[in-house]
Structure formats: C-alpha cells, structure tokens
Length: 374
Image 1 (cartoon, helix red, strand yellow):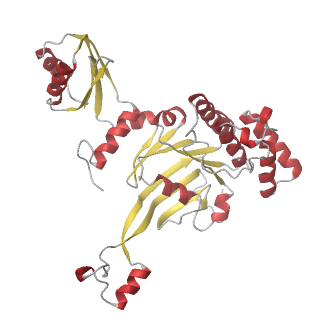
Image 2 (cartoon, one colour):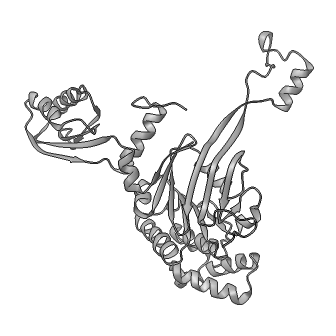
Image 3 (cartoon, one colour):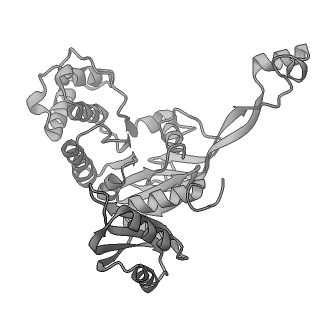
C-alpha cells in the first residue's frame, strides 16, 4: 500500500529523528561594558551592540533525540528539571520550531504541516484552564464544541459520552467553580477529547491530585483511552510510581539526550549496576554506635551509599546499602561482624525505578559519584 502524499512513518504515532533544539545565550564578551575604565561602553558601535543584544554561544536543550512511539501506546517521558522535557513538548505542540532533525505526529511533519499535526494531537496541560467559572461543566464543553465546529447534534452526543466516561455526568449542571481539582482535571480531559484526536499529550497529568483521584485518572488514561479506544498517550511526569504503573515504555531524558528507552522493568534493570542490601539488627543501636558502623561500611570498595533506618528515639534498627552489583554480601557481613553487632535479617533486592533514576541523574550531574559531563 502506498503512503498518502505528505505523510511519513504511518506505523508511528510520534517519531523524532535526530531532534536538535538550540537556544541562544547572550555573550558577556560582546565588546561593550558598563561603567568606567575597562567597563566603559567605548564607542557608538558598542552602544548599538548593547541595545541590539549580541548573541553568544548556544545552549542545546535537545541534542539528537530519537523517539519512536507506537500507536495505542502509553509512553512516559522522565527526566530531571532542565533536561529538555518542556522543549520537546512545545515542539510536538508546534509552539517551538526545532533547529535540526525531523518530527512526525501520525505521519505529519511538525514543521511543514503544523495544521494537520494539531488535528491529530491534543495537549492536556494542568495549568491550562480557559473555563468560565459561572458556567456549568456541560455549558463549558458546549462552548468549546461550538468553537471546534461540531454540530449541535454531534456535540450533544460527544459531550454525553465524555461526561459518562469521566464520571462527571451527575455533576454536569454544577458551576465549574464548584468542581474539585480532580473534577477540573477531568473536564480538561473532556475538552481535549471533543475532537476525538488520536494522540494525547499530558504534562504532569496527576499533579495536585489526591492519591485516590490520581489512581482513578491513571486508570482512565490506561484502561479506557489507551486499551479500549486505542489512543496514544504521551505523558511527561516526575512521578516514578505513575510511570511504572501505567506506561508501556518510558524514556529518560537527561541534558537533552535520551539515555534509556524501554519498558519500566527493563530500564530499571539495565540502568542500574547496583543492588540493595537491607540488614536489620537484633538490638537497635544508639546513634553514636550506628554512625561508627555506617562509617566502616562506607570504607568498603563498591559500597555507594549507606543510610540507617532510625526510630523516634534515634536508635537504628537497620541499615540500607546501595552497592555494586558484583559486591559479595560476605564482605559486608564480615565488616559488621567486627563491630560486634548482632544481625537479625538480611535481604537483597534490586533498586526501585526511583532509586535508579535518582542515582543515575546525580551521577551524571556530578552530585554524588562522578559521572560524564555534558
């Protein structure tokens, strides 16, 4: 079957190839200074340069990002602050133009066909409101349905379906100002789904929701929208539990580069060359004694981190060690044995996704163990 004109990568909902985005910075060495002496303006040319603003070196927010998100997939984007997540989201939404590479949404080129991209992708952002506080939930949706060009009959049918799907049907006549945060988030989702787009983009979808509302919202995304309706869900989140719970695959973006992309379980295993030892004691140790034990444990080659679990009285009942995967447990137990502390239980486990993510980003940023620079 031939590819329709103007479309590419029809098997992918979202695809980026070698995506690069640079932001210019203002150089301090642009030939002019304020003040006197070496900080003087110097000439009319320098005054003009100061007013105009001379561009200096560039900051690369995205450095060759390759992603291939399949249709119907729940895909999570994770990364520390400043990693480039917001820039990537803005590019997908056609709000920012990338410098190099290609970006496609449902086969349409983001740079060359922005109108068609926006008909295939809808962003659901927590901070975007746009609802009238004095109109009911249904009235707000009717207003947006009219803006989107839906007929009166089509709008009624679609709004009924969405209100039932999100559980807002019983509160449709209530003013928007009476909606809880969770209900407001659901109404945002209803508005995003009025046009029935195939790709939905979420930025921190459960931010600000209570635990019960967050769980309900995740199930709505995963079970209803993705599994039943086959929509593609792309979400950016700082919530590692959320990513592990609902995402088919995740990508970790750090300093503008994708450093891992796989299922949450595979990323958790592949990125970690560590393992965890949880060692509890027969008798809890006072703080001074536990500090000595922890200091001795830190001296063992291959031990990356040691922390104690203490009660309200400051006594340590167990220690948690993050160590190199190849470090034998016998070396740790022998060091503890020399202190005369009686061991009650020993457990070995893999680091959680959150522990892996935190350790990895600390290492790469130079906080904690030394890692590669950018």
